[in-house]
Image (cartoon, rainbow, N blue to C red; front, side, top):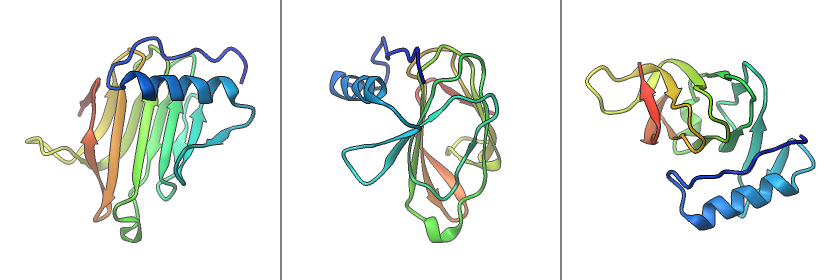
Length: 143
């Protein structure tokens, strides 16, 4: 957990969110921290993290290299659950969720979300009907 960097640019965040995330990261002593709501912020620091499909909350990618994450289909009992993934490193991380990213694009649903190699690239998802509806995706490309 040592050597955590702070978010240097705001990207999709206003300064209040950036300040809160940086404060939470610097005060962190375990793998998760409570946010102001009932959700958790979880640090992802591996090279192939599996994001839980039934645990709503925020996930901060702190991997020094590329994190090739996976995300399974949400159960329909989780309709409305939201997951946020934010990159805190300048690496082109990916999330693979085979045929599950509903973006509204012509080829939707997509399988892979690729993060721009920029701190602050982020993905906001909502579970619905066994798929992930993309709510926002600054710095993300889908394929």
